Length: 442
Ligand SMILES: NC(=O)c1ccc[n+]([C@@H]2O[C@H](COP(=O)([O-])OP(=O)(O)OC[C@H]3O[C@@H](n4cnc5c(N)ncnc54)[C@H](O)[C@@H]3O)[C@@H](O)[C@H]2O)c1
Image (tube, rainbow, N blue to C red; front, side):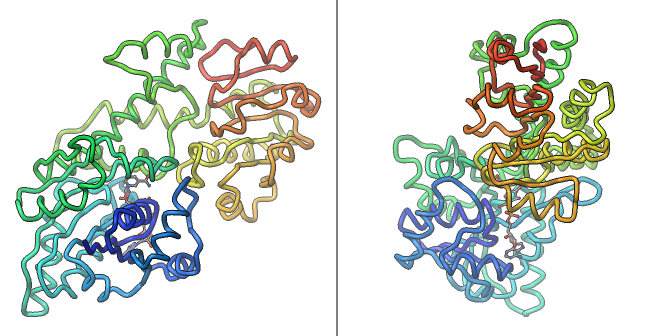
């Protein structure tokens, strides 16, 4: 099939590449000329495991095109997938300007039937907004064509995006139009060969499903973080509690880790956007307001522990930070807890030497001009001259460091672990002070 993907970011590029890999002819559109140039020159603008070979082989096979040519992108395919960003606006609601602009461009240039698929995470009612934008463009032209708007939210996780797209848990299609549903069934057939994964529902339910899923996951994280802080205060161990409750199949082990709060491009903005929609509907979501507040506070817990260790005076201290990305296996630093930690430390007069396996370029952009923050190229280099170590991202390469070397290198042998990566007893045995989240400090 011919498919156009509008917006070639984390979601659009993965979607385009995976659809091309299934044999489709995919036109990836973006307005960012630099991004398109990078892709056409064989580069990949994002770090996503397993993505590069798929992009390369499909580009070379002529099934995957990257372009800024809007009329050509509309002409290319009946299926137009919108995967542009929906960042938060000032008031927390999702900023729909890119989605509406993409819809208008389709309306302006279409010349035949189109299925317009919103894959971006969008508030309930967006399908109607997209429809109106297209109709308005038709009116301006004095003619129009038949089209359908379908909601098809994306559930992939950064860091495992290719795997998630190729083997999805579910494919939600919000539509009541049999023709559009049939086309999307055909498009997704290669990704659900061993069992049916498509769930067809109303457009509004599909739009809400995406926010509901992310909000539920965010709620689990905030619940565990709040419980972790309590556990610490009353002498319990959140890791033991996690095993104790995760073993209940109604609860399960996933997304039950205490830490430094959630970040990334999705949970924070989606929790806020759903709250905003609920407020507008006159049905405020009290639970989500708490989820959000707990998360904001949790991002400062590690800095507080470091300050407490030095009796509130860390002026002139140097903190090594391992991990900058909001989670492992990505270079994405949007709303990353590392940024809150580094800001807190800098405000208190400390210096930071930080390392991340994938997010260094991003971090250098973000902290450009900040004298107290240095981004270095190895985990060992981050420790040079450092007083203590803080761990913010659960990268595999941080899981089993040389503890003896750590103790020798750090001026104060203290590890502040925002991801509970280590066994407290083992660190104590190595002569290291250990400050995890929700566990008894050793
Ligand atoms: N990143 C994730 O893990 C993830 C997962 C599921 C859903 N989502 C949702 O998918 C959407 C996209 O997220 P992302 O992380 O890929 O965003 P992104 O910022 O990485 O990419 C968006 C891209 O769209 C381009 N763009 C903006 N307006 C355009 C237009 N009018 N025409 C063509 N291109 C345009 C931008 O230049 C950018 O390259 C968001 O709504 C997000 O909430 C993201």
